[in-house]
Image 1 (spheres, rainbow, N blue to C red):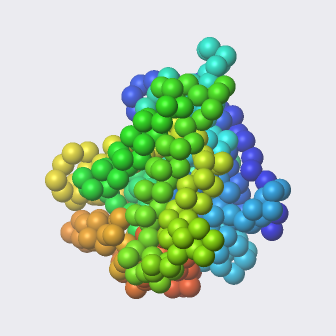
Image 2: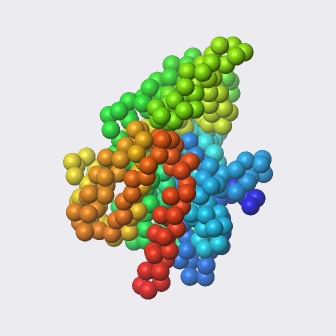
Length: 362
């Protein structure tokens, strides 16, 4: 399946801060066919470093980041469903962000770009979905930061989403999660080439961004998966530990496709996200939604541990809301939601089929 990223331009978007960005571009891809009733649409929300290219093969021959889950006969079956994925606001893969040109100045926004929130990202997605003629999504699904967007959809736009699938995610970051993001941000800003974010006409802060990605990548894996993949093995040519070589490769690879300023903005949006808006309990805010939930976590995920998913599940159950929860066994750590697809696909296939059936009765 060859796909092409599309760009839709909107006149403006008003952020939670009250700042208006105009115009705003949203990069997105679609897979499958929207039915006549426009009742089979699913929005896939991407994780921090993802983009709109979730499935299929693009013009450069690259497979989508969730290619193993989206397509004919897969978890998100494009023979049955119309699947949409959009790059988040503040991103650097086609959607308006710090790298974009500010029409008021003729220069890139850089650090003059306004602070964005997960709520702002969802607001942009809703604009896109409605522009496609879709008033109610069959489901919103995503892992990690994508799961945060899923929760925001269910709470802020309960009438617009029939079901929600947050995977390996949280309703709010812990101190540890914020700390890891701050290390990454400081690595970027400590790079002499960052230049206060004004580096677009010169040398980008590649070293800082590479280190930030290396730190992040450590949190995506588990001790067991790193031990199995690398152990204490060293490369024969230079004596470097294989895990060192791997992290350096991942870091340098990331620099080629991601903007350092977007890293700062998106990680801050994740840290600011709090579904309960500062309250201790999630119960009151989750009372706003009538969405059906399928919540998935993984045993070895120490970045977004299962207790955070359980907090969401328990709050929903206290309101007698429709929620199914499963903790899947995996040694892959946080990356499991991208790797361990067989059980996920089985769970999601059944969940979506039931949701579609119930919707047809309504």
